[in-house]
Image 1: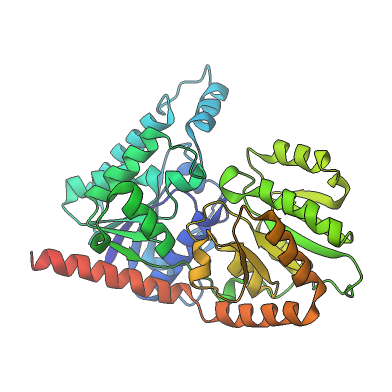
Image 2: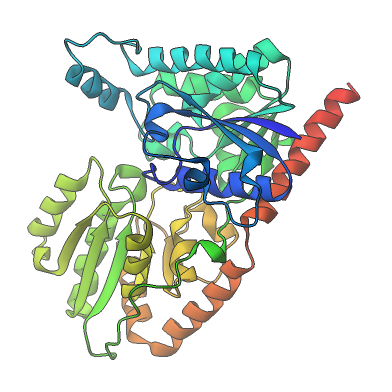
Length: 410
């Protein structure tokens, strides 16, 4: 089977979980014998020197993957304002790009149409809203079925505080025109039903995963502090409304009132970073909060290993791969109940994102009680170890087969 896949970020040029998921799924599909033509904006491929360097696929035939780079400045999690700032920096230079993000999405779709006319494939797979137009264009010229993969919706990105109507309309059209919709969790499936009116029978859940082989075996070890020593709590992710960094800081303040020897590390970048720095200062805990900046590759895993607890306080998290990364590094996770990852990772602490009192209490409990910490470390690691991208890919292949079979009998 041959798949024409549209994405818009891919390691190492990724800033969030979508790139990690696209890498894992691509690897899993190839390991299961699927051939992929992967179409990415140029910004997502600029630093890659070779196919092997791009995919780093173990136990898989990289000849089964072809990369098609489209000249475009679109990058992961870009919003209309980000694109406007990019175009302002380009002022005075002749540009082939759209004057705004939505025009660029349309231009990307026209390029996708050209690629679809040239490539040989059986099915189209498009990841998230920026590529839905491309997927629809490819379907229109090829007549091949379209699968759209929902990693997040506009309602997740805005934390439920309104939605960009243009983005919403593209998401809704993509889901309606698709032959099948894949969501990364049952949590997201329900949002798609409620907010986009997509029939339940058209939606299939394929959870994200993690591979043990992708966790570096070298690097820093765990903190060796005893129960009375300094402990470290880690937030790692985009510093933006969806991820709940403000709730993390509020809970940190309360946790420090019970255990003053906690150090909080915030690793990542995002539009809310200045506000979170100000919040920490306003609460009088700036001396206990370290902003580590954006981390990559082994730096990320070293951060997990140095931490005693990882916290994902998201307001709305379709999945959330980072807790899986944390427990695979034998660091317990505290996750908001509004996160899809809790459907596959039961051995973690859970709390409503808005309940900062309970969040603080559970932080302190995980750090203070050795038996609880050890049990969460062991059981979380064992549970995540049973997951794999190959298994997730097999579910995708089953979806492909059902779509193709349905068309054959239609």
